[in-house]
Length: 146
Image (cartoon, rainbow, N blue to C red; front, side):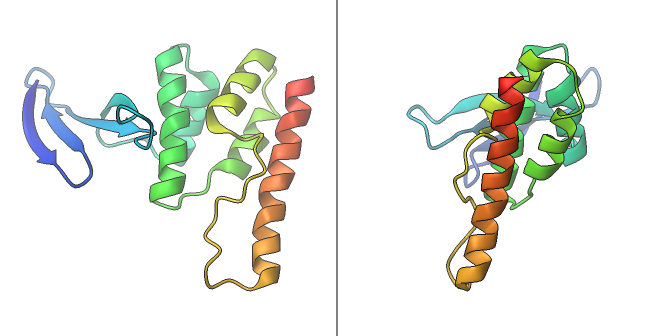
């Protein structure tokens, strides 16, 4: 693999696999953690939200499940792409309780913490956002109990 681009601002590197022609992105999730988070390598173009949810729910590779869940969280924080309602709806339709618990843990679906910006919002908007996360967390807790 050959390094073709380094983005020092976002701490990413793009590589080219000369044998296949595929480009790969080296990036980190949970970068706020000591040591810079978890390094991941993903083939470009990156999967979208729907594809990431599919990987989280059905991949047989535990590394892909981890990477998909952590990338969903990063996309929520950085790109403001909401995935929680779609994921909890899909989780409720699978019959693998261990997978449900694993995905809930990796994505923090059982946390009612409001992750949306509150500055510049009215009180009713903040309450609505807070209720959104609480409802998803409640549903996740019920799934964990089954």
